[in-house]
Image (cartoon, rainbow, N blue to C red; front, side, top):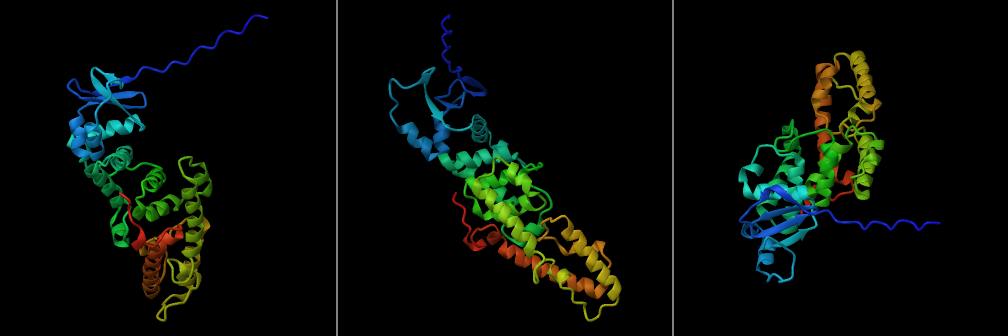
Amino acid sequence: MSPSPAKRKRTEEAPIKHSEFWLRDGSVVLQAQNTQFRVHFSVLARHSPVFRDMEELPQPSDGPSVDGCPVVCLPDESNDVEYLLKALYDPTFHSQQKLPLAVVGALIRLGRKYEFRDLLHSAAARVTGEYPTTLAAYDAMSTFKTIEDYDGIDFDMVTLLSENNILSSLPLAYYCAVQMTPIETFLDRACFSQVDLRRCVIGQKRLFLKQFQPGYTFGWARKWDFHDNCTSPVVCRISREDFLAVYMEDCDILALAEPKCLRAFKFCAPCTRHATASIAAGRKKIWDELPQMFDLPPWDQLKNDL
């Protein structure tokens, strides 16, 4: 039997120089994954005490270097480092009205890790603005204003908020994620941690049941009391049955639905006023209890660790 061929040794790929951030007068080379960035230590140090301390450390004579510049290996995604450098070297980059979530996430992750405080707080303000802590602010929103929207953004936002301890925005992010999402979708979300997955599954069930309980958003429809001045008892009874059929059929989470949802139904004027007031009071209760639906502390105890 002939001897088996010798296995080839695995060779590491040579690092790639970033096309934009390879500055000829740069004084340090950052390497993230297989990409190298030649930039200025002074620029990094000006915005980050972590890099400021790093710059002041004596560089070992036998340490890795490229073109006389020390190489600092970072355990971060190369795309994240690229977005960070774009924000540092071009202030207009992160001051755009809307940014992709990938950019915002990079500035939050690296901003926390390396203490780029200005970039961190600017990026965090975008996510807390899109996922506010008051019902009035939520009602004032229609579309995303500072982050580019896309299908599935709520799932990615949950992960970003959870991993970076931006807890004040988590209740609404969870709510948006579970609002009209079958449970199978959660199980398919590989990016979800076990904690986030559990909170979403439990919170979805709690919200669906709670929204139909007396005193909450749709509780008035389950236990119907005709208004004293009801002018069309038969029509209002049928409308109430139709309302329940629509809002219970698909098991959607609509606990924060606004009173305008009544427009499609033919309640008389007094019953419309009664249902409108009940919805307004009920959704306020849902909002006040929203964090606890997902096993989080109350709103006033949710602090961001930035």
